[in-house]
Image 1 (cartoon, rainbow, N blue to C red):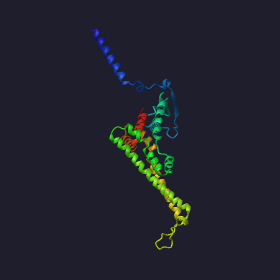
Image 2 (image 1 turned 180 degrees about the vertical axis):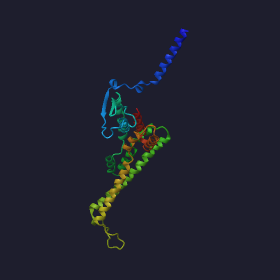
Image 3 (image 1 turned 90 degrees about the vertical axis):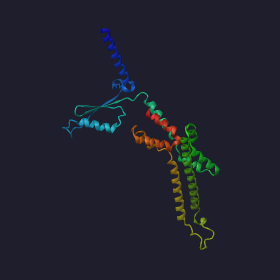
Image 4 (image 1 turned 180 degrees about the horizontal axis):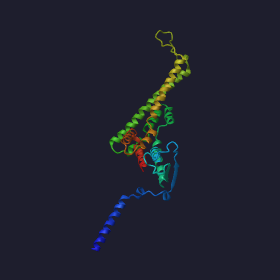
Length: 284
């Protein structure tokens, strides 16, 4: 009988240990060492109670308010403790040893994405060329890293999405080219003045009204505005940095986050693999 009881106890003990190991795995995520082991900072704040001397829950309410303001998502691993009626302790552990490496990897992934942005200088350099050389430069700008993205794309749907991005950018770049030429023509006429731009037959009843310098200046300004709008349309195809990082910071379970990310991945199909690398580093 005694041997049977010992055997039962050993089985129960083994099961308890096994359950405990399962519940505590992985230990680096489930077990939090204190500040004395992991290192960190402990700050104790004293609350001014002169306006609420008779409020026994003042410190608790201040703690709740600060938690919502400082760490609403609970991602900073802060420990909040109330001491007495008017003291609040905040413990801030040191970041994990690999935190710097993870931040660096995330920053590098972001930089790879942003390195493929359109730059105004590159657009204007291409536009300053002429003839076939200019058109070739604009097409090269429009393609960007599309060929690299196509090499890694799986499925016709993704390849078609990449080619659509290229076609849309090319259309905008060639629109900027046409606006640039129109502006140059108008500005040349402005600099030449009204005398040089008048038609030979100014006495005919059907001849257009003489151009004044004011009209020439206005035409040049309008041409420049239209050209600037065209360039901005091209630059607007870049990934919106602020919006992208704002979406990343949303709750991971948020449907708005997932929907927004899907839209960004579709709109920037040629950057999809780089964007997915950013997402992976962000989640690490």
